[in-house]
Figure 1: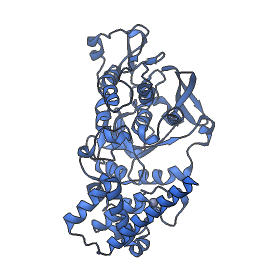
Figure 2: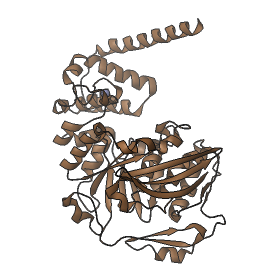
Figure 3: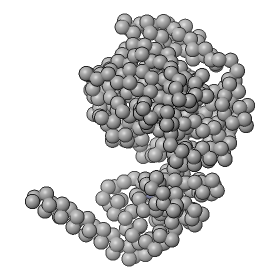
Figure 4: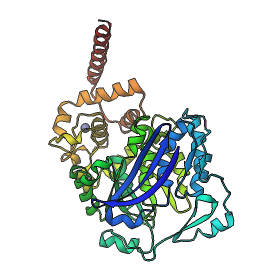
Length: 432
Ligand SMILES: [Zn+2]
């Protein structure tokens, strides 16, 4: 695979870095765009974001990644080759043969010279041709952050995190509002295409997030990309989402020095599996631990129930928690209170004794009327898929002595019976 022609362009109020990615017979373009006011932070000479974005595809195809234009960070290359490529091969994604080639004649950079460049305010990087390229920071950071945050960001780069408004994201935000490594900005990543850049991100995706960020005195940075146009022909989004999102964040590395990535699993639940990058984010975290940038797995130290418990007291969360799969369908409440994610969250809040605090975002009356079905569904999912998330809620039920009526088992049997009927019908229809 070849990454080349990296360029910085500004159109329609957005600045973007774009490049060509060629593999097999196809020649693709890919971009990462931010509002124009963040233009100064994009680096058109750096191939790191695109390298991270397409890594999985190169590994699956057992191809080297050739960086024809732009430079790549030496420590990123080392980490990818020593940590991620072997890990991906172990999980069955390629044979671990891919290499990153950043010059037609790979040269070993002078380590002394490289280290010398790593002083605050400068990023030491390797240029094409094996030379050393110095990426000098512009003095006196001009930020576009809210005024209150300007002081914090002045002269230094900032910490940021994502803002999905879900449990994991709220935990990362609230947990990191104070201290030396406090977040100053939230990031929202949106998949689009070049033709739609001028439309920007639909307000229905950004309004609420921006409002929450402002309430918490944080900047809101929307990022658009079409990286998935290359990846989604070969993978489900869940198989590459962490690489995709971190590639977007890395495009703003001149601004962001640390990014709290909200993990879906706790560290002790993570177990490498190519079905979901969240299963091995602890390894991706190690690989993106660079001299001038750190990805930090946030929330890996606690379970989802502990996270829910932590955020539940916050009035901002009580008014804005949005875990639902179908939130776009304009329900009366922010969450449909019927999908799998809603069911898990509502039951967790009920076990924690905090459900009534969320009456603005969940249809609590609907839950109360259908409580037996909710619990039966959860038990059935735990029984059917052995899912960690459902089983953790059941563990919590036992730990807290939460009482579930015995009649839940009738609903449980009913679900199994109905599922069997559906399967039999499918089998009969399939034979016709
Ligand atoms: Zn829902």
